Image (cartoon, rainbow, N blue to C red):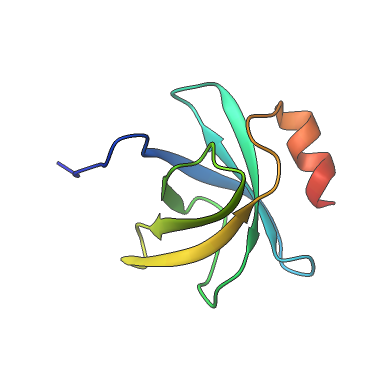
Length: 90
């Protein structure tokens, strides 16, 4: 069982635009989608599980569960619809 801090949830990367360095995370628990800009040198792929304060706007440290490490990102959108989130990174 994973340990989480207050406000931390898991989400799945459903889209990644490597040219813009932006990705969309789906949080099934909330039925929401969030857009982040990658500020670190971690590999992001579809299906990766990301944990942290996924509702954060601005600079945030997230956990990449497959890579087993923390990384820096920038919350671009806060909770959004899937359509709006996908539009932001295209």
